[in-house]
Image (cartoon, rainbow, N blue to C red; front, side, top):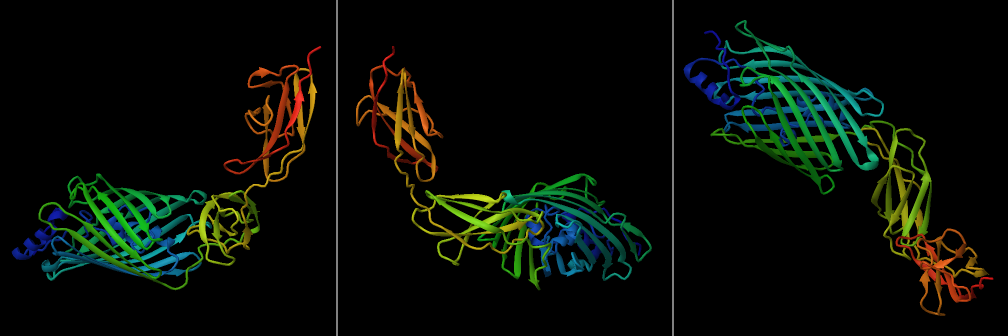
Length: 509
């Protein structure tokens, strides 16, 4: 019996195959790309906007270049039941480091159409690697073998396919952010040679994606996808995918939302959740369907093992750390790292020597100001260097440096003065302590009524007083003057006043 060439909507795929079985007519629309196809519960929870992220084994589907981001061997799998359980998906993959910077994966993807007897298998051999020394640009390639089989001896076929992709990461470590771009081409010029001699094209897909990690644990992503699939109406049009992912509890609990605008599932939303431990991860994704097609559920897992590959050269620990205590703050300065790939530094603080410390800041310069500290309490500081490579590499910690913030101790200035016609010139000695400047106070009454002469602290140790609050110095008038030191702290603190001195302005001749 000749094979029936049919144009199928993936939304009705299960019904068509069921009809084909009941009527004895085998269907032969193989490896369609419409509907909610895709690998990985995490990726699908993001609506499939994974081209620029692609940092687990599901990258073999979305963007093979992303596989190069893996730093450990990984074994992963997925199970999904869609169309009210009439179609099931299975996926398993083993990825492992090869050569100096490469990752290889062997994967198997099956779509089982249940009672129709049709099974579609895809076998992947993937290689990906960083293309730059700083591990910010990745390339990847899939070689695939397609096999379609059925309970009908004349239905089925096989073929070879090729995918490729690139991924670029732009880290901004001193801001704690990152921008990513991804591109992949899937199944270009791929053909299935059917048992009856008919050649069928496998639908091709072009994907362009971008992602923005605006906090350490929160990422926004979007994809634009173009695929030409005869089983989907409006073939060749652009589909939009978008998603947001957040990780909580130091990266243990992941939550995500997604949107997908395929022609067969217009404007559908997805959701997902994950739990991630050091060596394993489980993911779940949900996507609703229109009409009576039921909901789509996907569950996947990943086991990670073996040593973490360096992914670059780890920076050396920063040296020369100095901690200078001030009022409620500490200034830190250290020697910049010599490695050109160092883009930022992490600062850690502890309240006991050698004790458990916590990260309080990431900076792009070799200095920092830590404020809001308790005066009289000793703090212990260490600094690490962070590379621009992907993944980022953190150095060992610098030698620990203690510092004890103290309240400002400002001595009273020693003041002298010269009186000339129409003015009073006041001078004093440099005060002791962390001084930003000086304030001069003037009054016509001893011990009270003093007003500040200067609007901003004076950096010099001399003030020439020619007017007071807009009024000229009055000849023959007696004035009472003292000076206070001003600290560099925030807010500024004034020290004690110098001894009050009195002067009579010289009358004009």
